[in-house]
Length: 353
Image (tube, rainbow, N blue to C red; front, side, top):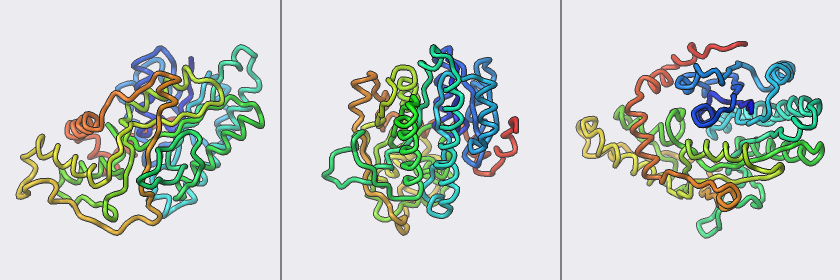
């Protein structure tokens, strides 16, 4: 099978591509615009594979996307390309509307145009897998049950609203055109190659540098944490085994408050790099509380029962084991995150324009 992956140089997309190349015989065509969050260094270990191809293209450019479909003739699309940082969406919502909504529309139309021309045997196996977020559901109170696939949408930020809009487009294309779609909604991911503006890598790198560890509000916001490589396995199970029209929630069953995430990171760092403490008694001494984010959701929680039962998938990592692996990776890969923080990786993101 040949799989076209959008956003494959990003955090989750690169984990997915690494998983496919390492654990299957499938081919991957990686389509990525290489914005600030796209980094080809995330794919170094698979970039020399004969089954991997990279094209630097903006998914909003329908002319180029149509050409790529005709050139590579994929059997499936896994659409991950998206703007995903909530703070950035509050500051610059237009970028999120363009990439997450217009970009998804562009991908749907390029895919549908290609799909319509396929012979029946190829048409019957084609899938368009849209990868989304649990943030489309809004937030939960402490006593609410976790999100299921039937939870009504109630997005809170420009980011989650743009992803909700994209989800609705995908479902509409499935219903209106009988287009073979699948949707997955995941909880918060963490792990190797995570862009440093997100909570876990930000805390790790700030702590290693002796900088303050900023916590929004009281830090009691709850998130369900999913190790990125577990997510990649789940996405692969979905694209290779799921029926058309299905929706799956993918979560780690790890509900943790933000403040406890930070404390857990500090405690592990106290243990594994005590020489970096300097005059500190503990990395916890660096914790500082800042004004809360506007519209900050209080709690996310995923009920992953459906994918567990239908596709026999379960996360392999606990939050403790995944967090230790993540911290170890960042300690051992200082050159990667130093290049990211300095912006040096952008000049190395060479591709075909």
